[in-house]
Length: 200
Figure: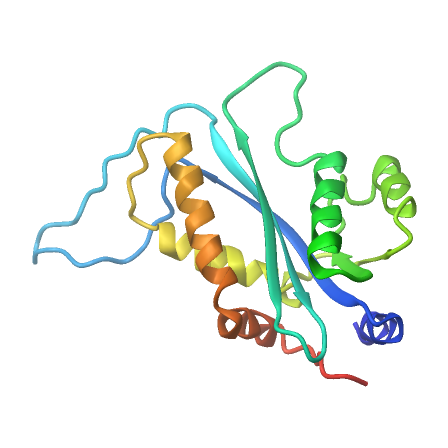
């Protein structure tokens, strides 16, 4: 990880971590209050395979507040021959949006998902001279601050009954937007990795 930090500092770039997650209509379980002897029950309509996929970046640079940038993708159910979740073009659009919003070069760190290391993705990243890409070690979620975003998001969605995929999408976007306006929270996600992001 020190190599990534030196590269970002040398380029005057933003160091960006990326990860993706999905949420279906069945809410994550969470603790809640209830009358003694009566277990609270949340009734949901979780039939089918509809889900919201989200890809997010946590971006940090010395002297700047950290940023959370995300995109959502709605999967409305099975269609033959269609890939679920984000494809290479979707990731490229997310990176283009981050580059435009941050106004500088990016050093991207992400995991070894098959779409991150595909030939098509390598072509797309090579076409962007402002982008430098590094892979996280295998099975190392503890080094990625975006994992804490998903944990925080899923806790906030626990025990909520969503009546449809559009309502779930609105809830996910609202929760992520709230996080965007809390740089102290994003700092906490970064600190949880116990990586040193101070200038070398």
